[in-house]
Amino acid sequence: MMGTLSRRIGFVLLLSLPAMAAVSGIVVNQTTHKPQPGATVALNKLGQNGIELIDQAKSDASGKFTINQDVQGPHVIRTAFDGVMYNHMLPPGAPTANLQLDVYNASKQPGATKVAKHMLLFEPSGGQMVVSETFLVTNTGTTAWNDPDNGTLRFFLPAEANGKVDVKATAPGGMPIAAPVSKSSKADVYKVDFAIKPGDTRFDLAYTIPHADGAAYQGKVVTKDENTYLIAPEGVTMTGAGLSDMGQEPRSRAHIYGLKDTSYKIELTGAVAPPPAQSGDAAGEQDSAGPPIEQIMPRLNGKAPLIVALALGILALGFVLLYRAPAAAAPGPAAAKGGNERGRR
Image (cartoon, rainbow, N blue to C red; front, side, top):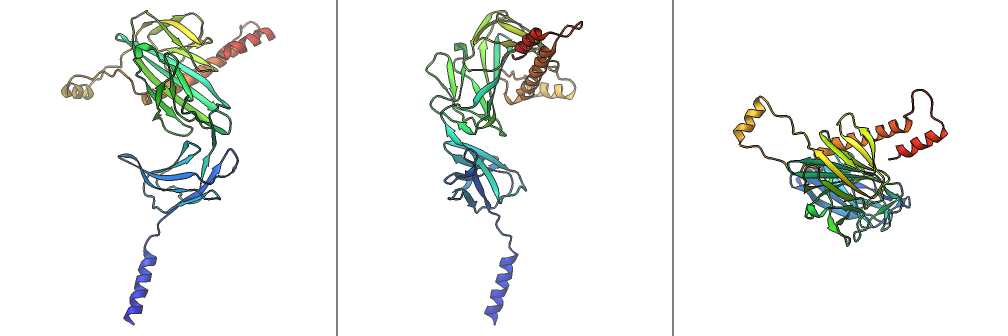
C-alpha cells in the first residue's frame, strides 16, 4: 500500500517537472532544394566568454536533427557543410523546434560573385593617413564561393603599412567578424580567406601609413570592381588624373570621385577635422582621469554609419549625374546615352 502510494506521488512529481526543450529541425540544401544529410549542427551559447559549444549533432538521411539541450538565453546554431559555416541566431524566447537551417554547395570558383562597390576613404592627419576600404560583394547564385588557398578577396596593401591591416567580414545577415588575412604571391597584394555565400557580403579593412601634406600617393585596384570610388572627407582636398568628380555627399560632406582605371595616383591636402571639444562635466571628468588618449587606428565598427551614408550618397549622386540636363531643353538620345555612361561610376 505504502509502496503504491509512493510510486503514485513520484509519478505526479515527475509530471510536474518542466520538460527539457530540445532543439530540432531540418537542414535544407538551397543549391539542390533538398534535405541535406551529414551536416554538422552545433548549439552554442553566447556568454561573457564569447561563443561556447554546448552540444552538436549530425543531420540524418532526411536532413533532420535533434539536440537534447534546454535553451535559456541567447544562443547561436552553427551549421557546417561543404567547408562553410552558417549561423542561425536563437534570441531568448525564440522557437527551438521545427527549425529550418539553410546551407549551400560550395565551389572554389567565384561563379555569380562580383564586387558591386569598392570604396576607399582617405583620412590624413598629424603626419599619417588612415585608409579605410569597404568592398560590397554580391553573390546572386546558389553556390557558396570558398577558396582557402587563394582567398575570395584580394586587395592592395602598400609597403608603408608594414603588413599591418585590420579586416572585418560580414556575411549575409551576420555580424562583423575578424577575417584571416595572408600575403599572396604578388607583391603588395594580400588575400582574405572568407567564404562568400549567396547574398550580400561586406568586407571592411583599414591600415595606417605615413603621410605628408600634398605628397603623392599611389594605389592599385586588384579586384574586378563594377564601381570604384575614392572618397575625401570634409577638410581634405583630393586631386589626380582619371578621377570622375561625383560631387559632395550632403550628410557627411565627403567628396566622392569615381575611378575607372585599376590604378591611381592622387595628392591629398588638408586634414581630417578633429572631434569637437568636450565641455561641462564630461571635460572635467576627462581632466581628472589624466591625459587624453589619441586613437590612431579607428575601429571599423564605428565607421559603419559613415560607410552606409556614403554608399547611399553615391547612389544619389549617380542618379543626379544620370538625369542632369540643361534647363533650356531636354537631352537628345546621344546626350542621354552619355549620361548613362557617366552615371555608372
